Image (cartoon, rainbow, N blue to C red; front, side):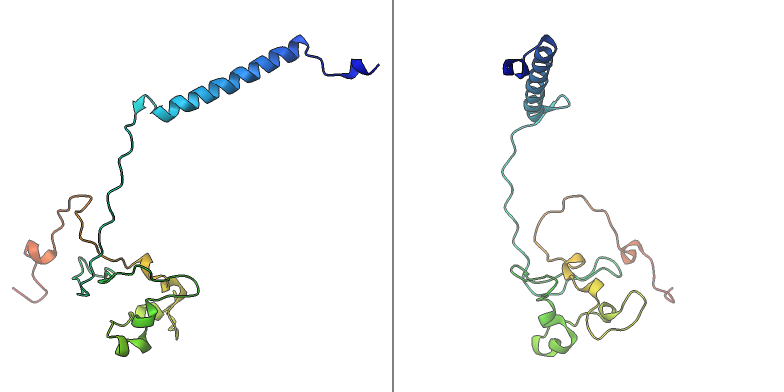
Length: 161
């Protein structure tokens, strides 16, 4: 009697199936509502992104805003390859290439390990230039800035009075 082995929809199984379908449809409805409003706050349609600003490419060195600030990149680096195998920045800024390129040499600190040992090549921890150095663009600041340099605040150099 094979018909006895068939799946039969008994009242507990029917109740479980109805509960599962209700839970699935409720979660879909909540997900759709959540896309429109999140936590009671409705979000407007997203605005189109502003165009990407043009890089400053005048090749003029910029004054640093504070001591030990990494110098900014005064030229475009669009299309530069910077990977584990290739660093295009070093093709001009590495010590042995600066005479031919006219670019400033990478600081000697970039040749030091964490322990202060001098290396023959750029230290792996200083290899990815754009981790610290950034190109500049002519844009408005995102946040207001009231920073004043010490010299603007009337602080004199040591020995001046």
